[in-house]
Length: 202
Ligand code: UQ8
Image (cartoon, rainbow, N blue to C red; front, side, top):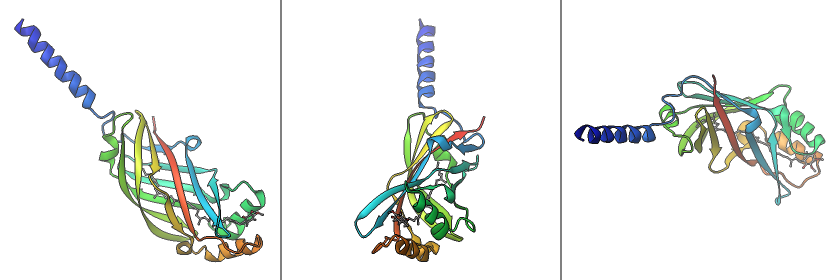
């Protein structure tokens, strides 16, 4: 009888320990962006009142075992739903012949990410550097991280990140777009939001 009681206490303890264990120990190697399941969108406002949502069709990225995270945005993949506008954005604004991509680099805390059980989320502050149009500038934000499967995490903005086009030398390009489309104005503060899925490499 004493043995049975001791065994049931022991197995109960083991069960509790198993339930509270994180799904994974440290990041266990490199993680790469699942492009098909990831989205990055930005919003433009023209003539002071017309807001339009756009995106980029081609993204790539990775997170190394020590938490070095990167995101690369193929600027030629800009998608605004109007072909001539896409072409003008590529040539006049982003100048993709000279600056084909934008990139983001951040060092994240591997411990907070590794400790998430499946279905669990946390919100963490992230300090990153955005390299756009030949200019590198800091971006401070908060991101929501959810472990959606053992080897899969989703990283999402909790609020839009406001990109100031002037910081990245894009004011002149915006003025040219405005002129080409005969618009009274295009706002240079651009909200960006994303949902990125990273998968651990086998
Ligand atoms: C686990 C863990 C935490 C991991 C972390 C992983 C990680 C690394 C995460 C990343 C973290 C992070 C901090 C990411 C930052 C992401 C950002 C901020 C990326 C930036 C993306 C980017 C490059 C956005 C674009 C920014 C920009 C300045 C866009 C310009 C938008 C404008 C102003 C568009 C104007 C459009 C417009 C109104 C055109 C006028 C127009 C024309 C010209 C036209 O021809 C036409 O057709 C005839 C029209 O229609 C009638 C027009 O309207």
